[in-house]
Length: 464
Image (cartoon, rainbow, N blue to C red; front, top):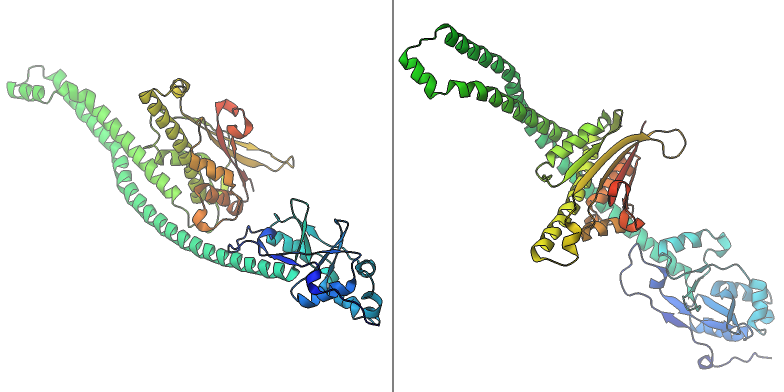
């Protein structure tokens, strides 16, 4: 006797939700993929379900419902396997789907539509081999359910892996180009620094002799004046014209100024050399305090009298590192600190000029300050020593750009075009030096930091 089959039009119709039409991105989620909406009452005939599968060859399976409650899922593959067994068609097609489900019941994976495609693919591939190709159930926020074909998920994951590989390749290529350019610039600046240091060393080396010569000549003039009280009128007039007494006072000051200028120029050239050592292949022991002082010297033109720099240096041993890259990190952080302070000071001046209520009074007693603190510490109780370098400032308001960089997180994988100075600094410390880099804002803690600071960057470097 034949089995009665309902008309296809009278059966529950599967509906395919196309998902997002945007190109896939590494952050794309399951909700962006095509999802099937197909609920099948468990007491309905298996023959009718077979008819639906036959008319819809792309349908991965059916969500089995009992009075509106999800009780399971049967895939097209599992359905076909049981019908192909000896006497399977005669045994199951004439029965409700409940009978088939009692035999074919398997574990199923339920995921949220917000989970990323790559994460979902990893979870799906962890299933036992017999279940790897089974559809995934996607539970919506309203409690409804959808079906995701595993092959759709797998294809999307492979596409994203290809995108990630391409991004990594382009990023690596651009990073190599950037490193090559920076290394060339570093060698150029290093050569200029050498050219500056050579004449400065010559001047500095001869200043000591010049000071002795001038002292001897002034002594000789004094001796002449004491020995020959009556000098010819011509000599007396010449001595008055050149203001010998003034020269006695001003020549030592001039020589001292020359020494100071030569010393500053020498320190500046040395700081440029240290800052440009970015093409080093092996780490070398370096003095962090010298690096910090060198960067401050390079930024001296921007550190006006309004910004106070407080140094709280502890005892630090020489640290094996790539000092040029570490100096770049210090430069990035100090530049951010100065930008925040100058941003707030500029706003304060505008408030004072235009008498903006509420802002003028809050900035009258504000004194811009940057604090640099260093120490040797232990952070995990294991006895391993770390170098801690903390750079903080007291700007009450953080510029929008800096806030965006901090909120976005340093460790996120981003295209190279979206990387920031803080992101590069994070990678230099964590990837290149196996250290730790963090930032704390008083706004996130709802209270001032130590010493009335509002933002503090912390660098931790391991002592080998």
